[in-house]
Structures are given as structure tokens and as C-alpha cells.
Length: 326
Length: 183
Image 1 (cartoon, rainbow over the protein chains, first blue to last red):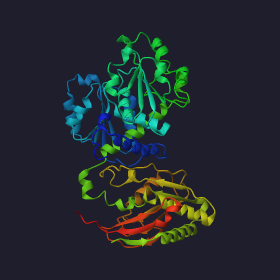
Image 2: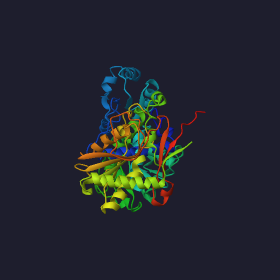
Image 3: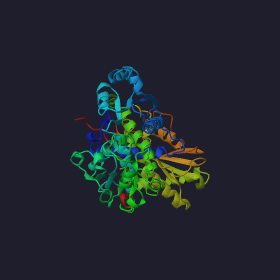
Image 4: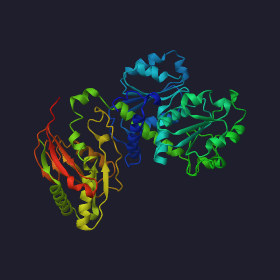
């Protein structure tokens, strides 16, 4: 994967590249279950988490991933107040660059901000969520979780339920899963599914839960944010919960062995019922565990690698010892 | 021209002999474990464990380590595209662990494998078994059990081909691949 300079959007990745990231994640998944959960792989590398939006989970996951790789992880949480002090994103980039990071992980409320940062920085950039646009490591960790639970991604039916309009999770999962020939269904109230979403992402759109769940292998709940009430996109959380919430009765419409996913943090009793969240079909905590493994793989693929050194031959020295048995 | 170092019969004999030597060196196979270094040592580690089981009538725990995360050039080299998970399904603490690789050259892979193994526990002893020791060490590392020792010039590659299942073993061989002419 010498071609992976940044991870900004899953659209830019081929199916083979996605498979390679998932396979690499498998190896890192094992590291987190060892007695010593740390490998020396990225010793001496610096990874900066630049978060313009509060996101404790994602930031923690990236931080743990970096630390388990022995990289130095530095967190910069840029609150809106310091932005109002007047520093532009450009100047922040240049300031960062002067500190020689190897990878910058960025979360920003503006769609496209990571692309801008990547164009200004010489180091690798990982998009950890930009506006309502992309969140590639979320898509990858969901795919990893599904592949582990189902053995494959091929031919699965995946139903994504909830606030599709504001969801990076819905977008990145649609993009990734369609690459593997999954049937992707999105379902939500008309106010929360953008027009032409079906065409843009090549998925099926439903506005009623029952037909969308029928025969599904994976049910993915999206978080409902309370701001949507103020925006008058939802009449009430109770009504939403009754029409689109996933309880045991709704889950029974999907396949018997369907898994239930949620990107967290969950609104229990709104988009997902207690029984389902804690039930045997829930893989919510597996998703969290997968998140660290996938982020380790992404950081490894971005931060390791220097073509000049490779052509000088130091990587090839060990080749005879590593390529022996066919 | 390809120079064959070991043919199928020689490999079978070498594995049997190395297995006996391992048994003899250990305090009894009860505390023994075999750990292959991915990918070259994978098949060989299974062969050795089988041979020991045949001789002693006891099954030996087998593990597998991938050293990609422990390479001394990990931070500089290109990422390895084919990493597999390490599998050490037993606690190595207090055991005599035999690390297994097909070819021993610089010793850097072995150094990395030792580091990896130590992250799983503290073995009483770590031994090293290699089917071919081709010389050219860059670290102070030596093999305890060797199929064949031979000095091979630095540029040439030593290849070991082992069939993964018993029916493929007729084509087993270890050979020196001549230096490729650059086009």
C-alpha cells in the first residue's frame, strides 16, 4: 500500500485497497488482546490529533491506536473560542508542520477541511470526520466488524436506520459496502433522508421500517441528535422511537442471525431499545474494539514507509528469510 | 543455475534429526513449545511438532509470530502489505520455546521474533531452529538446531519450498536462486 498517502475519503480507495486495510487490521486486532498491548512499530513517529469538534470516542480511539504502535500521540483540541482568536486553518497547518508530525488526524465541522489540510501539509492526513461528508475509519471499522461477524461482506443486505441526512456514518458505509456488492438500504423519515440519496450512493431508500428490515443481515442504527427537534425535522423523540426505533419486535423482521450496530454514543430508548443494545445480536462493543485495530492499521500504513530508503535496499535485506515457504 | 541444497528426502531426514535433537535438549517434552516465524517458518514449525509428537507420543503446543511490527526498520521501510495475526495460544512463561524459521541469514528476523515472543510471556529458554543456515549474520545470533549449514554469497537468495500438506512433500526442496541479471 505504498500509494496510501492520506486517508480522506473511502471513494478514493479501490476494493483491493480496502481489503488490504481490513486484512492488516486483523493483525493489529490480535495485538490488543495480548498481555502486552504494545508493539514498537512506529517508535519515534509523531501523530497529532487535531480536533475542531469535540469527539471523545474517536479521539481516544486514535490516541490508543497511536500509543499501541509506540508512536507519540499529541492531542490538539481546538475549541471554537481559539478559532475566534483569528488563526486560520492555513496558519494552524503551517504551525503544525513546523513541529514535524508524521501523521495528522483531523476532525472538522466543515466538509472538505481535511482535503484542504492534506494539500497544505507534507505529512499524511487522516480524516476523522468532516462535516456531513466522510469518516473513513468509521466505515472501515464497521466493515471490519461485519466481516468478522459474517465471514464476508459479499452479498449481505445492510439496513441503515435513522438520520441519514446528517450522517457521515450512513455515507461512508454506503460507499464502502457498495464496493463489495452489499445490498444497502437506508430508511428514515422523509425529513431525514436527502432527496436523490438513492442515486448518489446507489442504495435503496425506504421510509417505512418493516420492509427495509426484512431479510437484513445487518441493522445499523444511527444516532438521533436532539438538535433535529429544534430544526423541526422531527415532531418528538417518542414518535421517532415508535416509528424508527429498533426493538426486539423490529429486529425479528431481519434475519435470525442479523447483527445490530451503532456508532455510539447511543440514545437508549430512542433509536435503539435497551434489550437490543445489550442483546446477543448487538456488536456495538465489537465495533469499539475494531475501531482501535483499524486505526492502528491506517496509521501504520500512512506513517510507515519511505520510498527512498526502500530503494536503497534496507527493506529488501530480510526478504530471503521472509519469503521462504510458498 | 539453481543449486539444490536439500531435496525432499534430505528435508525429511533433517526434520527427523532436528526433532530428536530438540527432544534430547529439552527436559522432557511437557514444557516444550514450537513457534514458527511467519511466513517461512510456518510449515516447518508444524513439521517439527509432528515429528516430535511421533517420536514422543505427545502433542506440542504450536504458535506463530509475524514480525512485521517488530522489524528494526519498521519506521523507515514501506509497510508490509501482507501481515497476518500472530497466534500464541498458550502461555510461553516457563516453557522451552523453539523459534522456527526456514532460512537463517542476518538474524534480524530472529531478533524481532524474540521481541514479539517476549510480549506474550517469559519463556524459560528460547532456542532457534532453521532448516538452512546460510551465514551472513548481522547480529550476534546463532541457531541451536540446523538442517544444513552452507555459506551462500550475499547477493544470492536461498529459497525453501515445503508442501503445506503431507501429499505435497515429494516436491519439497531448498535451493540457491542465482542472482537475477538486471534487465
